[in-house]
Structure formats: structure tokens, C-alpha cells
Length: 308
Image (cartoon, rainbow, N blue to C red):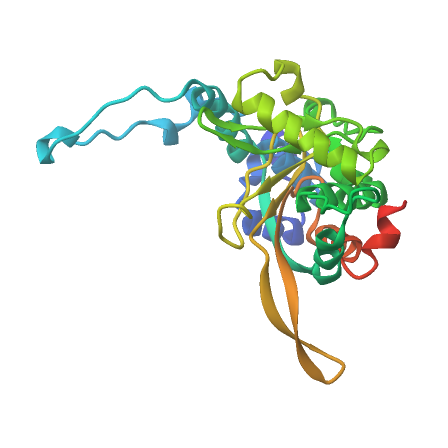
């Protein structure tokens, strides 16, 4: 028997599976007796191709298509330098979008009771209203969800060796919009802080970013990132995962919605959620369960959950 016949030895079922996957079975190494190819070999072959380190120089898609015309051929233009922060962020975004198989789960959380509670907060001594950003409540709820679903607080930056790192800390990344570009500092040890402390930390890191006083190290070592469009507008979107994290939570602007409860429609305050996750580690069912847990933590039982 020739080496080629041994190499491509496989059952009709396996050959059909290879065709469905679009795999050239002659390029697959069999692990069964006499080099026979089985389904496991095909799956491992496809997985290895997906997880190969991406090198832009090896990709034909990286060829830049140039127009035969210049922008100035059609009217007045102005050329400016790309902001330094955006130039630094660009390759990281390309790396994340190219190497991570993104899937986004869209949902809505009923935050009616949470918003009523937040609006009712007053200082015990002065009686003045206490202003707490909704983001502080969302961070608290998110940490509770991460504890129940540790896969979302992990990284697979050592994918070549088949290792996944589960983090025991809870450092939440916050996307801050500045005049210099988008920055993502971390709220450290969010699990050890109450709502007021989280609100103070949010203000501090936001101010430090806008004033370029943030330390470079504060952009690394995160668990998961929150990016919010609530202050600007919009509902659902597809946020890009902040590598080496495996998920990112997008928050839209809350709005009033008529919801059918106990036989009648009642106005409720809803918060759009857009959860992007790394499909290599997190599947759709787990993402849906994570969102359900997050919705519960932000919902009517939020007061109990915040005390955890």
C-alpha cells in the first residue's frame, strides 16, 4: 500500500464531513490505525487553521486598493494627522477583529426599579440628592455575573499551547471617550467596592484619561470591558472585544417601553445590552445565560444582588 493511499484512508462518512467543512482531506493527518482519518482529525485540522497566528503580510486581503483618482480631484480637502491614541489603538482593533471569532448577543434589561432607587438616593445628613452614575450599578451587576460564569473572566492568549487563564480578580475596563481618542482604563478590584466607591473611581479614571494623566499600566490586566453609548444615543451595536479579554458589554441609551405584565401594558425603563464574546471559548447558550443573569442583577432584585 502506498503512502498516499494510507494518508487519505477514510470512511465515506468522514469524506463527506470533510467536503461539508471545505477541507482537502489529503492535507489531513490521520490518527487512527494505519493513518486512517477520523472525524476528530478533521475537527482538529480546522481548529488549528482557525487558531493560527494571523500575519497581515501573508494575507492577500491586505493588498491596498488605490483609486486612480485623488480626493482633491473632486473638490477642496484638508489633510490631518491621525490622533496618536487612535494610531496606537488601530492595530489592536485589527488584531482583535481578525483573530477573534466575534458573536454578539442582543438583549434588554428592565432597570425600572434600579433607576427609581438611583433617583431617590439622598445624603443622610444634608438631605441633598446623591448623584451616582448608572455605570456604577452596571459594574456591580456585571461582577456578580462574572463570578457565576468564570469563562467570561478568562483569556486564551496562550492558545498555541491550548491553555486558558481564569482570572481570580475583577478589574473592569471602561471605554472612555476623550478628545484624544477612545481609552480603556480599568476599575481595579471592583468586587471589593460599593456603589459610591465605584462611582468615584469612574470619575477619577475618566478625568485622568481626558487630562492624559492615566498610567499606561492601567490599560492592561482587565477582566471584561464595558463600552457605553448611553450618554450619546443609540441602542444596539457590535462592540469589538478588547484582546486578550474574551467578552465586551455594550450599553445603549435606556428608554421607556410598554411591557405586558399581569394582563396589562405598563411603562418600564429598558436598557439595551450588546454582549460580544469569543466563540472559541463561549458558546451561544452560555452567552444567553450570562445575559439573563445580568438582567436579573439589574432587575427588580438588584437591591439584594448589590449586597452580595
